[in-house]
Image (cartoon, rainbow, N blue to C red; front, side):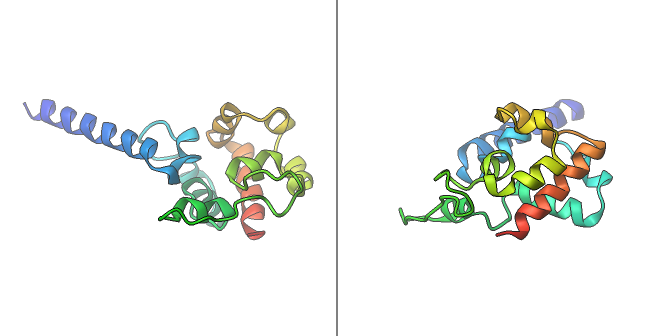
Length: 149
């Protein structure tokens, strides 16, 4: 009986968690790479500075222009266009990681070309769920990105 109740509670929590990240517009990027409730391996593998930067980026606790838009209520307009490049794209996590020309030199240093050539949400998922050197390089790139905003 105890196991049944425990299983039901875990299932209910997982459903509520899933509903919340799909309902909440602040979780647009988060839901691309976070698909299950678990402790993320990067929390144990990276040093504090890289872990902190990656955590901030993953959870939207940074200063990219899109964040202002996600937290604005009452229909207020916020300019979320990228002011670092001339693409006129929305300056969100996907844009700065894969598209923004301003970050091209660092992108080439820190990411493998298969991630930023023809970028997609699947490639973003793969990158954020990588390990080893690739994960460490992603964290360093994210630190650089965050430092510019």
